[in-house]
Image 1: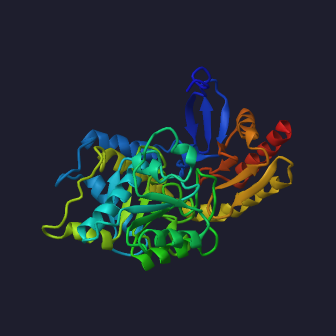
Image 2: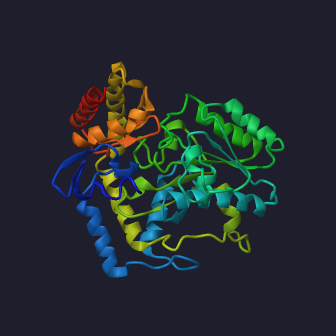
Image 3: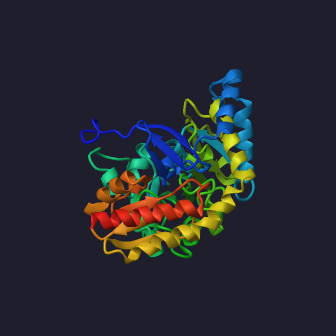
Length: 399
């Protein structure tokens, strides 16, 4: 707070892949804000849908037997879009809510079926799962856990690319008998942008099934076109027990997240006289937010933006790879989805490159060791070329 309180970059308007500050300077949004503006900025269709809903029923709780038509329609539509059959949607206010919901539900599920000792949750190094209580506890980014005191117990992290380490972690927990769930991002985002090794995620799912634990895919960043599919998991043929979603479900126009829950986990709670899941966010099922989400999904479908992400993921990665010949660049990663990153040889230069690119009119996202790019899915090859050329010019200036 102290370093920025007198030097804020105050944005005032946006359109498609562009944002403007209060002084009228234009920037190419190479990050889709915080990984979420998948349909781009300034979509009047979403604003109109939200405004129309606010004139009818702006907000109301969806607890108990209360509901509203946009929430019901959204839950049904998300269930239809999810891979396979039998999905139910638990709506929340964002990705952090979704992670807490999924991990609490994993424990509650096992208690309900007579396995209350399954409390342990395994996550991965570099994994990011939000900043709520559970998300902080399972964070694979150590700095995100520092200074807060004791976290939720019964959690551990394993190297993000090692199935052997994951299986060893299962064995350490009573031969897997104490593990409730493994949570993993299809593509690790904020922790460094690491696509999975071939066969890795499939191996995680197989180990979860072998040991009877739940597999939770954190698709908050990976969903709604970012990996070229609706939930990211389809890219790898996965069938998780739960899928956490947020960000791209509304393209950030209003806050919404949640969890897709498969029949195995949800069925006990829908039986007559079954267990109760005492959990929910005040704004879950918010009708205005759900109306915005439905309009956003319409745009993604109508403009074939999932296909567009698959078409441009290669050119984006190739552009970032072209920077590896620069003496300041150590590595480029990407190729799965419309997102990628470069690592710098000297991590202390990250802020210099981030600020230098911004000064030249391109916004990228600083990471611990490099910079990430995750533009709106409406981006063009021309925009990609501008991002790459601006990064090169900035690297030259910093060098």
